[in-house]
Amino acid sequence: EVVRSTIGTVIAEAKRDGRKVLIVEDGGYLVPLVHREFANDLAVFQGAVEQTTKGIAEDKELIPLAFPVANVADTRIKRDLEAPAVAQAVCENIRSLLFNVSSVDGDRALVVGFGTIGRALATHLQLQAVRVKIADPRPWRRAIATREGFEVGGRDIRPLVRGEHGLIVIGATGRTSIGLSEILALEHQTVLVSASSD
Image 1 (spheres, rainbow, N blue to C red):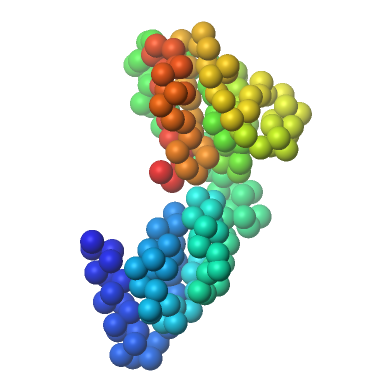
Image 2 (image 1 turned 60 degrees about the vertical axis):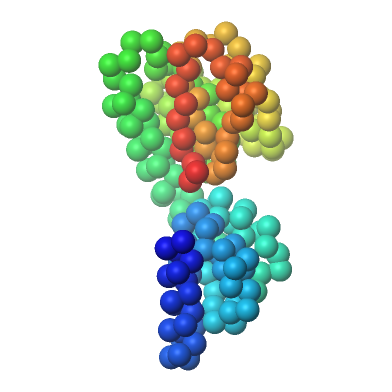
């Protein structure tokens, strides 16, 4: 409600002053909201900048967009510089949070999603001597993961988690990475980690 109210205020000020609004966004929240709930005021918006893969996917569902959206998520600088930093931060958080948990084997992980962040995570974990499995529905991403030496599965993670007690499962899809049927297939003492926007 606060976001809706703020957008309404910004639109009113822009109309009053004759200015245009530029949305700088991280996660695909505002552009869809503006299109759904402020459809009569779309001319006020100059455009948007989106920095996440999730946000770009959300925006693509709105096609045609009423204004341009600059896709920062797929830029080379974000991929090459940010992804390794995110991977390192996620791995450090896992280690610090699980340091005293004796039931978790820190040497085995399943990364769900082999996009920019998932690939960087898998590589970082592999360099730390962690045995990494990959799940991704896209055949070309699975082919890359296989070429890079990972055990790979498709959309269904259940074959990859069977018999894996104390596994660390990291969602890196930018969306909900696993559902109820996958959660029910997990073995005891599995740890779930999100490296996604949601």
